[in-house]
Image 1 (cartoon, one colour):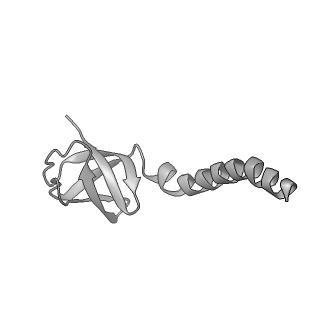
Image 2 (cartoon, one colour):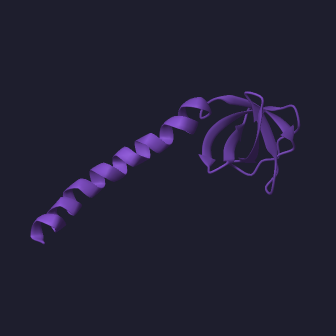
Length: 88
């Protein structure tokens, strides 16, 4: 029982870190820090961008309104929602 508990305490942080790295590689490498075009005005409630011919829901990180056809930088994601930054 003691060895099982030690194993869990030692291996769990390593396994969680490894799992997080695997989860990041898909979206992080392909989309984060890339630029996208706004196809539906982004406001505090809704909006959409397109990148690589794909449509994604988006929200501006500072709740700024971003107009259609403007370019934004993708800075994070929350599931299927991109958090974008308005370019000056």
